[in-house]
Image (cartoon, rainbow, N blue to C red; front, side, top):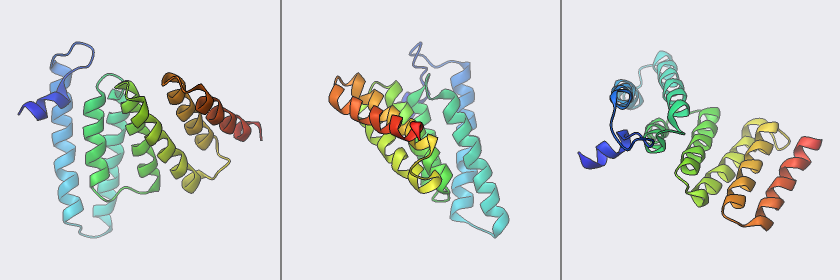
Amino acid sequence: MASFRRFFIDARTNKAGPHIVAQALLIAFFCGPLMYLSANPSGPQSSEKVHVIIDTLLAHAANIVDTSPDSALYILDQAQGSGDANAEHSLLITKLKADAYYYKYDFQSAAIHYKMAANKAIEVYGARSLYHAERLGDVGFCYYRMVDYVSAVDYYQQALSIVRE
């Protein structure tokens, strides 16, 4: 119970509140069917339903990532664990995980996940995409926060070279 409870504590107040209970209910409402549909596929409609549920989970994780990063990580793990995430879902999951680690002040893990998101952005959008440049800038900012200015400048320059083209 204690390990489950820690995912539903508001980072601002360090207490569980009504919005945290609503969040727990949302997760239970969507994660259960997601796991069931992933384990019991029954044709193309099942796949569409899974993608709708994943979209909903990702939207919720994006809404809470800054105030409740542990809850966001839990939701993202559930979405990723379904095995049905497409390339764009996988990219967004990785980026949101990086955001969650950033808001937990774990800049090393955030940098790792932003790098993974940058590599996935190449696969999805191409090496010269704005999305790829944004993720490189995010990596640079993590290095800046870790006081590794040489690496920060390197990633910022990579991002700028893409944007300038």
